[in-house]
Image (cartoon, rainbow, N blue to C red; front, side, top):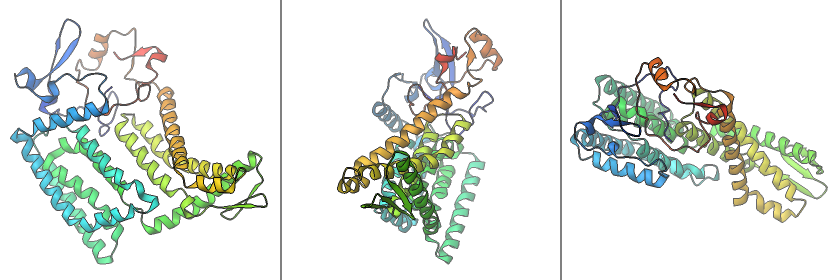
Length: 399
């Protein structure tokens, strides 16, 4: 299954950008079906995108195919020069931001941000997956990119003057976006902006934000866990951030139990789903807004489970609290909630782009202007989720 690029709005009124050369072509009718032929292939030139893509292609095979296509494209000077500029400018930018990047790296030793190393790795993999051929760079793209770079450098000077270390680190993300825009133009910015923006999650939160977030999270998790334990019939009551279980056991919901780690991981996970899910804007909005409550509920369930285990043994409960099974429980609950949420959202509203089965395909094409476009390469999504889910149940199909 392929999905449209989430950088552009989704729907029947979605604007159609000028496609790169490898995506331009015509439809030719064959014996079995209508087939899209890229313009380069129609002209007799072989292109990686003209190669047939298996419908059941897996993640590893798809990534290797895209990596091979990238290597083949680099043989062309029109493709190699912009990527050489992107690589050179990115290397200089990394050298300039090296102290801040090392500060971010040191924060990954903190249990709250141990997931930080996954963020840049996933962003690089996503860049390779979403890569498209580079179109000619316009003057407006270069000007906008230079403005972004100038603004980030001025902000760095301000942060250096007042010794604001955290925000100085954050400016790396808009700076790298400016580099891709200057060297690659709008065609590159459309598919690279979202993976690059995800890099913001590899940085720690400011100290003030951590202090303001951790306290309320501790209190809320303690209240929820106490309420659930009482509902289940356990002898539990709350004393500040302590949960007293009978006369013998006291469970302290300390800073590490506040759920800040779960919160940061799940917000990043929700952002990843928004980028690769190919959902409608209102579905992305619901998923984004629900990320924080789901993370808090999952962490509260971990504390509740630990409290229930005190009925078995205090040693078992304390070992479970910071164990791998507890982490898997939280992630399983959080991922399960978001997958259920996507499934429910797919049945709430049927998009206008799905036409009734009795409407002829020719009439639908004529009503849309008679133009058809090839599907944009995208990240594979699970069957049964996303905008196309529920089509069989409602008896509708695409025209």
